[in-house]
Image: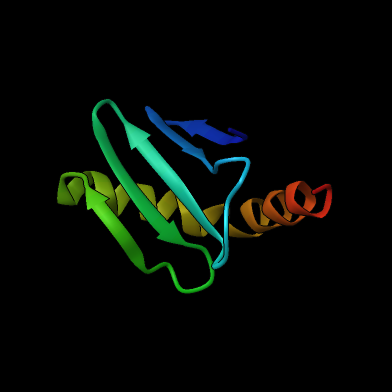
Length: 77
């Protein structure tokens, strides 16, 4: 499970055997969400609205880096 970033208590990651569309998982404590990288669509949401808003801001700020890591990881497979 490659970890992309740990910031402000959030952990951003994807699983080694992921599938398209490109997305990240984010967790904070027991809260969890899954966000598509190209559209920022939240496909799973088990976070408080305020926390999800913060997580989305971090994803948007790091989107290019996250996509590059996704591409690098999946090119190896």
